[in-house]
Every structure is written in C-alpha cells, then in structure tokens.
Image (cartoon, rainbow, N blue to C red; front, side, top):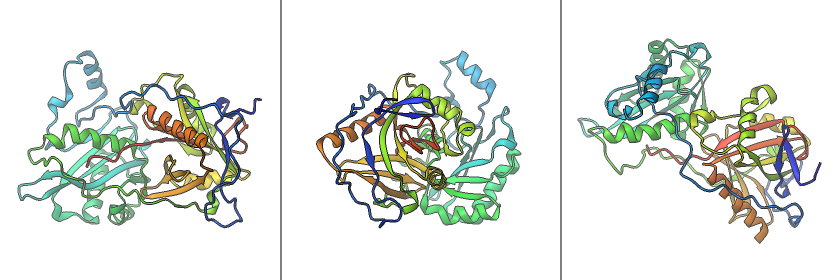
Length: 388
C-alpha cells in the first residue's frame, strides 16, 4: 500500500501531511506546537471543487405537506407552496408514512422571534421537529409565559396532538435556554442534549424566517436574535481526547454517502447526516475534506468523542491550530502544528475544499492511518447561525 494513501473503510483517501498531536496522555495537558518540521513527501495539495451557491437546503415545509402533496408539487412546479403559508398559523404535522414509534429524538428551539404582538412585545415560539422532518410542530407564546412549566406542557402537547411517544432525547442549540429546556424535558423523562447537530432544525428556522416570520404583520426587519449563539475562545483539549497523530484527508462524495448509509452497521461510534434531506448537489467524484486521527487507544478515544456531540472542525491558520467544536458552546484546540508557508497553504486549501462542499466535512478515528477500517466516523457540517 502506498504510504501516501490512508484508507477509510476500503476507500482511498489522499493523505495530507501526517502531523503529531500535542502531548499524548500522561503528559501535561497544555497544548504545545510540534517542533518537528512538516515532511515534504506525499504533500499533494487539496484542489477544491469549483465553488457554487450553498448546496444544502432543507425541503420546503408546511403544516399541510404530505407524500401526495409532494407528488402533486412535482407535477405542477409552477404552483408555489409559499403562497399558501399563513405566517400566523401554527404547524402540527406528522408524515402519514412515518412510524411514530421510530421517532426517538427531537430537535427543539424555544426563543423569541423578530415579531411584535399587539402589545408591542416580542413573540416567542416553540419549534420542534425530528431529523427527517417527519414531525413538525410550532406554537407561539407571549413573552409573559416563558418558563419551564410552559415549555413542559407544550412538549407534552406535541406528543398528545400528534399521537407520538415522547422522545428519548431532545437536542437544542441555544446555551442560554439550557436551564429551562433541561428542567422541562427532565420532568417529562426526556434527556435534553445541548448540541449544534440540530441541522434539520437550523435549516427549517432559516426557511421559516423567509417564508413565515418576514411575512408576519408584526415582523421587525433588522432585529438581532435575542439569544445569539456562543462562539467562545477555544480551550485546552482534555487528556482523554488526545490521539497520536492526525492527517488532512479527503473522500469522494459517493464514498461519503456509502459511509453514512453503512454507519450503523459498520461502526460502533460516529454520526451521520441525512444527505438527501439536506439536498446536497455534489458530483460523486467531488472530494469531501476531513481529518483522520490515529490512536493506539482508538476505541476508548472514539467512545469519548461519541459523547461530545461533535459538530465541526476548522483550522485557525493564524494560531496554527486545529479547532474542534462540540455541544453548543464548547471549542477545543484539538492540535497545534508548526507554522510554515507549506503548512498554511495546506490548511487554507483544506478550508477552501470544505467551503466548496457547502461546509460538509468529516472526522475519522483509526488505529492506524494506513488501516482499511475506522473505529469511528462523524459526518460534520459548517452552518451559519440562524437568522432568529
């Protein structure tokens, strides 16, 4: 096997430079930059695909959507669903083809909207969906009834009105609402999970801003979100998350699809995304960038990473470091590297490739970078903060 190739589940990955991770377990946890110069061998640069408009968009949502309606829309593309949206109406929808018992995870947001009520006060809204958007629920609230009891009762009504069981877990992405959401979910026996892996919810909120909130008679253009997303300064990586070395890698989009489809069958650890729902329009040969991590304790490392709700990775070329984002407001310096023109060029090319793929990228954990299998595989997506 050529040393310039790393293998992920049987798919060749063009190996970027293999860089040692800082401070393996047993040493001080402070991040240090490797003094070892970057090897010049096997340093083919990533060539990003031709940039295009953002490829990921969620399907159009409405409270009256159904399989039959979707088929009708395909036959009559001129007919716009948006014309039928009532911005003051609430959504209570369950896909008739969905198995209610199979919907075990919800995604929820409970926050104010850029809408004023008759009193001139901001309207709050609860938005609930599942990862496939088979379940959709919204409800408006006055700002005088924002507490965990209101939220608990509203979440219970989702179950009652749609005839679905309460979920095992509910993801949310606003750290400021953690206390209220955790308390409300806890009283219902639901585990509240702070996570930015609420991709379907984030895209739905983006769509609702355009098709619902901006058409509401009380809409206030230019209003900043009341609860903006945190983007804290990255902190030191915990010792249990250290690997031995890492590499920038890339995988054809067709192979990424295969990895996602076989994730549950092939790996004990990891997380995918519904690429069909997100509407990615990439050629099968488009190379999706990622990071491969080698560790002699790959399984324990993957197990720890699996509990982090990993949402994205990025390169800070100014500081010469790789940043891991997890949960709703956690950012770690995953590794440092020796800054040089070649290293900076490679890091910038990796970020450019990610942008060209609409923010899509991945993290793979392996026992060896030349192995033909992964212990863990996470498909990740950079998303801008929602407009609300």
